[in-house]
Image (cartoon, rainbow, N blue to C red):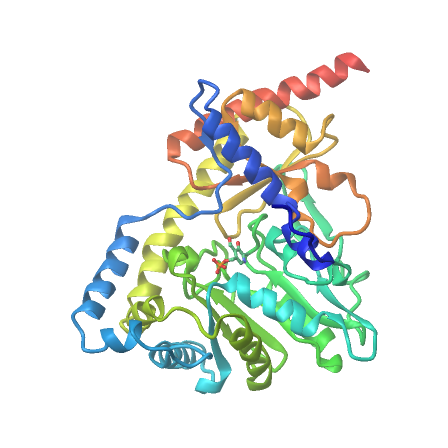
Length: 426
Ligand SMILES: Cc1ncc(COP(=O)(O)O)c(C=O)c1O
């Protein structure tokens, strides 16, 4: 059967951004092509034994408690499971000296849904017919933002300023405040910190400046903190989560070992939280409560924050160190720049003047058994043509130490050939 789709149905079923590449990757792995691939495409965190044990222990505790029936056999409030809301309020008030109440917190089924609610509650056509923009102040950013707006025209990303250290072969994206415009046409601002795909961490000052630009227009600034402290604490550089009247601080427990349970947490102004809660009621009534009940235990005991800082962060910090050291050792004399590894679970490589597209390079790397993600999937909402978007790769840190070293060595070999061929051809 081939149902007739609405415009929205067509938009939502289109294989956008990274979904198209993921389809190719799954088919490549399935076909095998007689090859053992080093797959560095995944956004899926690795299962770390201490993290799995934490969730196992919390589950055992829940199963043995009188609370169990109430958790799984009953509907609950849309806002979330009360013990988890209370745990977040207590933890954040103590940790960051805030005065949150239970009305400042919303629990969602994963944080992706949170961005979907927010993008459409604040972005898109207003009742007076003006298009309210969803502003991504620094492109590239999370590919998942490409699909959250029901009105695709609303998504609007800004090209960054490139802070380049040519000697060290490193660079860092910074918001270009000379271009960034936040005004009465802005519905909301959205960015990830630490950033998927680049590992960038906007500085505290940069975030505050964005929030200050948005405040006069009552524009919510949504800070996607899926990799931020206190959990999963996947920041390798110092950063402070910022709170404020127009800041919606959004977290996820996915990278803290619980992606299967789908837990997103929004912290912010009561009125913003209420809007998102209404969206949630219409969409799915509430998040599953089993994951929320074990998360409440892990937060209340302090174990989640401790394991994040002592196990999760050092594990991925070591991986980015391996990528950096290997590339420094093996890369040929071409204009390559690795984004400063400040957080998240990815390395981001820019190959300036790359003589082929990122898509072609992805194919060439597949031939030597290495799978990474072409960078062009990570510029949702960017309107202008920019050759930089076709010169980057995202490399997941989810390989073994040996796999990362081998993959970077093979990548260096392919890159050398690609640039050499272009010299011969010119
Ligand atoms: C930056 C960023 N935001 C949001 C998400 C979605 O996470 P969740 O599992 O909480 O829906 C991801 C997932 O990889 C991500 O990388």
